Image (tube, rainbow, N blue to C red; front, side, top):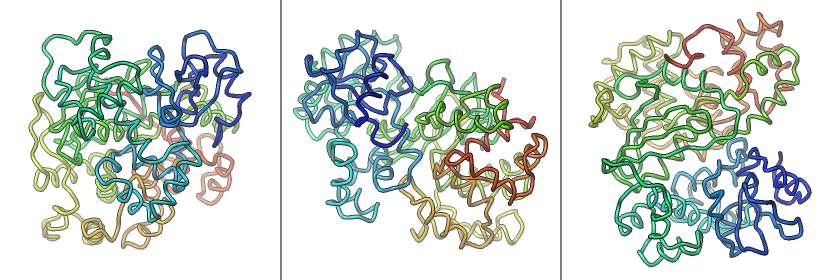
Length: 493
């Protein structure tokens, strides 16, 4: 698929008539005769082509006066994969909106983070998505409100506040306009909650585009888990979350058609941000069919993809945390990197209470690590310098790693730091910044896999061969790594 798919009427009509779930989130179908909008895979009888118009976002549909279908719930579709594969202004803005920046800082705050004027940001979002930042944030607030209405017994006033609405009246009006139901009617229609609801604990389903191979995704997160911050328990990956208004604990369980998500939040206003960060960590908005189709065109990669399609890139919920952990992992084993990280967590992390036990801390913030006496760090002097320089720049703001980062600019800034070579920079670009084309030709595991498959094993030759895999080289890395017997490649038992 490509940018602006909603303008390709013939393709959109065929996708709707085929009820093809692969295109959910790519575009939305608004039905002129009913005034509702749907996802392409909506199970109802497809409308006549002449009665369909297509929009690039749920917010654009809502702004045009359409309400969400009660059957297919288009507001709960996986997000567009466009925002994960691009690093232009619109993609960076969409990642920030999903991270709740408009609700917390307004449109001026969004524009300031992007380095553009509010007028430029609004104009580009409107041109590509049919809605400005306020409308896009409003659509997200409506979806958050629906989740809370349907999955918790919270009073409506608390839900309005938690979802980011400024008043009960605005909350009521928005829910009625978007869903054609009053908040109380939404709750009545929802499946009955299970008895014994625990305050602050939410059970959600995170959708994804099939196929999804959970082995390397959860295997990587579990095998590299930092004690106290992360764990694998009872078939779920659990970790603590540092969030704008407080902290949280999430448990993520792979299921055949969704990811089970159980969130414990100290402040419910953090719900949309927590969901967005978990989706990014698990790469749930990827388009695996497009990725596998391109990589599978290489005859040497094709058997790997046919054997286990749908691999995702395991990412992170905290870009600064991952950068620190990447430095700790330089030239040491996975076990040694976990040990170094665990020491930092015990000494400098913020304690949290876990009702289930096992998790004890948030990973230390850059500000806390910048205050650490370098001599107390049990690591070689050169790596100590690398770490202290990184955390100092993260703490004082001279280096920023976030969802809005320009990938090439961030690479250049990282490469300028002492002790940062191409491997460290690209693993941060791949797993923290989300660049789908990041590549690791010098990685020992990649070179070993390349040699076994008959691919060139020298970095320069492998990079030349991998040009045909662009822009999905980060996914090729996952398939190549998976040829090894390392625990990162296997779902924990």
